[in-house]
Image (cartoon, rainbow, N blue to C red; front, side, top):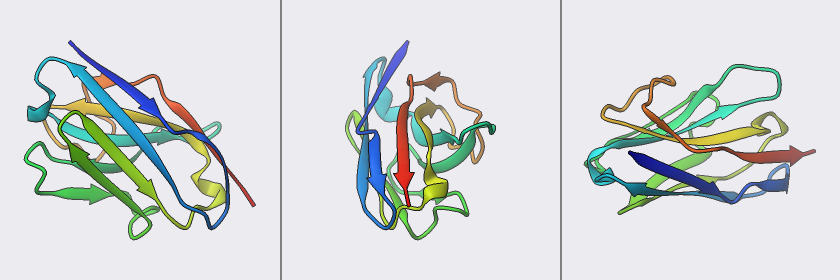
Amino acid sequence: QVELVESGGGVMQAGGTHRLSCTASGRTTNTLAMAWVRAPPGKEREFVAGINWRNTFTFYGASVKGRFTISRDNATTLLQMNNLKPEDTAVYYCAAGPNLDHGVNYDYWGQGTQVTVSS
């Protein structure tokens, strides 16, 4: 079993920067792909960013590419968010699985952390 715990949510200003953190525990997590997925208000979950278990490949959703950066170090996965926009407002989930999926097909999920960007 894998437990994922997100931290760092809050209220931010448009144009600002912020960082989310995900800490993994349980089974060996360094062989899992890690991802961030978000659920905007009233919408389905959408893929934000992912990184493979070898830490050699990253992939981003079109709406955040060039603004967000995912990274990982041992059991911690970070999401650096730059140039935040009001449309980035969502619950952000940390997710993990054996493969880097460009959607929401992951085996393990955190509880989510709310990010609100005000204009």
